[in-house]
Picture (cartoon, helix red, strand yellow):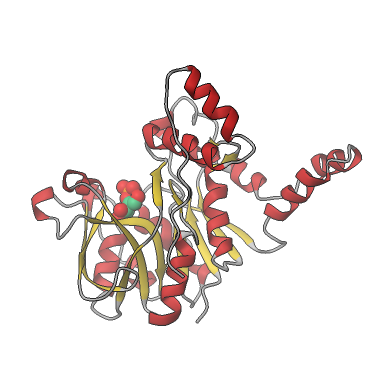
Length: 300
Ligand code: G1P
């Protein structure tokens, strides 16, 4: 079955970015000139997603406005003959009825946030994108996963390698047989102690899940950090359905951390032909040597 719907959990408070996030959602912080959330939505679109479900919270109204049309602005751009930016703006808004918003009323964890989307997702497989994580890859990471899913079915999760002392901050998988773009996942654990981690392959924040995850999430068992963890329900679902790991081709930026967010700004600015040279000159003025490396490409 085709993956049509994507869920974006965007209820987090963004305390790591205060005061910037006092009145503004962290997902609206900009990487170059686009909000972080826009990159995840673009990645989903590239993978064929048509319905975008946002699990929001209080103070997240700007996200809803961002994915709506802004007639005054559109009219002004039209009158001024700025047809390029106008077309770009219009292209980026999901078509009528294709963006849905629901609220996570209490911050009970990622598993709870995903469960809040159950009625909007219905009885079909869905994509899940954690927007803090940005990925540069060609094709995008969700597209790479959909390509695997079309062959394997089941549940698909993107993974990447990290240094062994970092695993405790993530969900970690045990790798079974199969190639990098479709291997069997044999187990997973959320935020393990480094000596108890099954590998250094972490769950990267991109998933394709079957709807049978929802009754498991409904049990609302508390896991690591006293939160309802998605990883625990996935581990439970693994007794009924296969999980396939995709070690994606690309580069990730964790925009949940300040350093990762700044690194994303540098990397995405260097990707942009309209900014690259001027930006490199400005960095060089400060004695910083940066180089442009093109986006990693997955094999055809
Ligand atoms: C969440 C998931 C974790 C995953 C991580 C990726 O953790 O629970 O399994 O590895 O996202 O960013 P969080 O960042 O919410 O602590």
